[in-house]
Image (cartoon, rainbow, N blue to C red; front, side, top):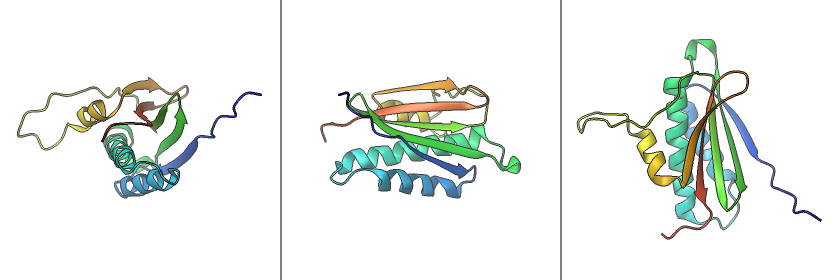
Length: 137
C-alpha cells in the first residue's frame, strides 16, 4: 500500500499588516511536536517575509483581499506557499546599503533550499519556498 501523504495546512488572512503576526503564529503552531526549534524559527521568518511582501505588493487593502498560506511536508522539505491576488512577479533586489526595505526576498533566498514564483490559475501569484527537514544548526 502507498504511503498516505500529509494533508496541507491552509489559511486565509485579510491583506492587513496585523495578519503577518497571525500568519507566523499559525505556521509555528501547526508544526509537529519535537520539530527542531531552529527550523521553526526559519519557517517563522520565511512566513513573515513572504506574507509582508504579499500584503505590501500583491493586494489592495481597499478591496478587502486576502493572502493565502499553504504549508505541507514533502520530499524532505517543509514547503510554504504564500499567495496574493496581485499580478506582479517578485524579484530579488539589490538595495542600497541605506535602504530601509527591499531585502525580504534576499532573506528568503538565503534561508530556503529552493524557491520560485508561480502565477495562480485564475488570478494572483504564489511564492513557494522550501526548507529541508534536517539542517545543521
